[in-house]
Length: 206
Image 1 (tube, rainbow, N blue to C red):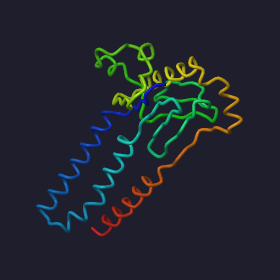
Image 2: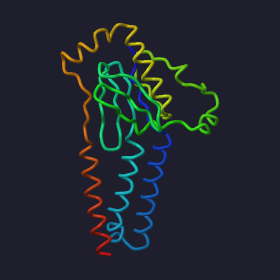
Image 3: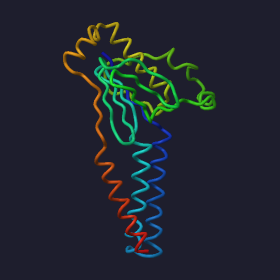
């Protein structure tokens, strides 16, 4: 019915790129001044910082599609099938309320009044202008705020209801045992753990 919408933070992505660039420059400087051996010793702490920044600011996001809402946070990804959806709330970050509990979207913080004033040309209330994009390629936005993401979720839910796709959703949820699912980012957690251990070894041996 409509294209998938992906919301991420442009600020977070810029911060991640800047952090990676600074890390590479630091390693290059150490290599030139102290040699490859010292650069190798500096690699674990630099990689640890870049990995943490990536996990916190690049990876988080929210996807809204005809089938579900996907919330990617720092440590886990939560998939919310529409029959389990209830509504959204606007706290410090967007909160998606479901039949299985509340899911907070780390990537969609509440927009400050200052930020809203700086974004000239945008509607004062994104919820009033939200529409479902026509079916096609994924529509990506780097302005993930609680208001913009919440508006997209509400607009998609309303469109699905009007089209009849969610008729009997509660019955389907019970009969099929639909629930929200949470997948822990094991790879990310493991990588950060290994880098933290290597960093500790480097610092102790210094």
